[in-house]
Length: 543
Ligand code: GLN
Image 1 (tube, rainbow, N blue to C red):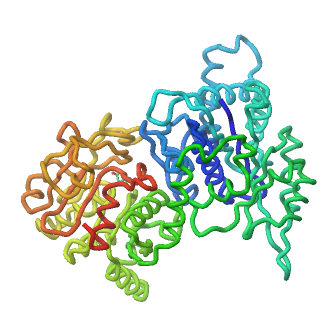
Image 2 (cartoon, rainbow, N blue to C red):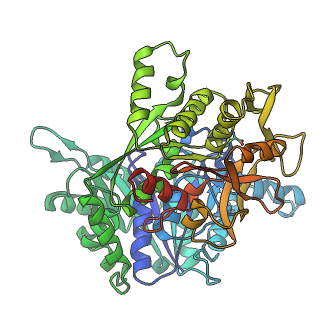
Image 3 (cartoon, helix red, strand yellow):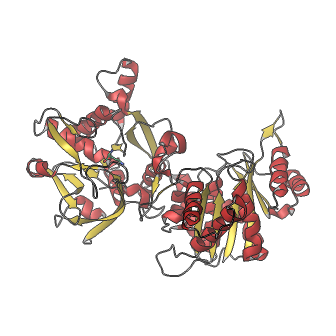
């Protein structure tokens, strides 16, 4: 097993996850089986309880793990399926050690950060690195370990210590340390400044880890002088100083690292498979797209694109497949509401919605903006604009249909109005009817087709069932299904009990689809998720 440990310095947001995933792509293109593990030094057990405002989207795995969005990068870049243990947090490791202490496993010893936490971290890394991730039953050959946060943070100190020891546990020759840093540009001639990187490497070395490779985020490629200076001050060879400078799209990142000789340093032949060539084709194809397609995203975190990262990626995968350049028109759902005070924002939101070629309402929790989303669904239905509703997007479209087609005035979800007159969407927990905690329906569940032929089934390529990932509590009210369906909104996919509505499709509409699951978590570049592909095909007249 070869380990590539990726740490970061100077500041966050340098694209450490993309760099780490790109290194994984290079290893994979050399024919290795690659997996990855992300360490998040926060105390939360997982990302499930974190607001998208703080940490971006909560990514959901097949096994129901609610994890950091970087795991999504790994799954998409490496085309693998990870499990909840591929995201290690301080909450998880402390729980494990504290449970062992309560059982008496430490035989009367004082339990300490070193060695007990650091040993537990190393055991975890070694165990999870060997878990198959590519759909086969074979153990990976290489594991990318990304350490979240910035070197020097108090929270990450035990992990740095664990990783320092880890190189002796698994053999120094089996670990490559990569440090991602920033090279800012200053002054009238745009001088590349190396001091921040010098400092962060000094800090890392002070903690006992000497990086083998430096990856510097910069606007332009590093000059020869900058590389030499960094090599001299940071104790790395000049060939091992790489830059990740600005490129038109992220698919260029593995190519850019390859061109700078990263594969030589890792001692692998990245051209031994045709994977890198596929990335090349994809990266340059994306650069040439000039016909635009406008998709309106009606959500509530519209100024925080990380909150919808996987949805954006899925739209991009689908747009690439229909040869269009994606333009997302972000619409704050509450701006569409009638009682909104600012008429300029109201007018602008409606103009944008009406000019888009397709409408997407993504998942969400809480009632802010729900009425705006309902209006967006109504507009798309009545104007025959292609619509995709995901999770809450399915629920609001169902509410809208009940109100305006079935005439059930005041129809709502009991999530937003517990005592509403017509509960169109209701709480249907899988386990407990009385507890909210731990009652979310999470992870991969089967959807069984209820009709022989429909647009969305064709998009999924037929088959008997679909496996997608879920994260919700509420469902379409089973009591209303018959009347909804007889008015033309058909639940073409249900769960294996026939109780839960998973997919709807509206008759006599170019493309009006709702899914209770989150298809965005399984979309891949080159293999777009079917509901997204359908939306983009319909929006560009190719369905
Ligand atoms: N709030 C809704 C529910 O819990 C939708 C969740 C979602 O969109 N992920 O069912």
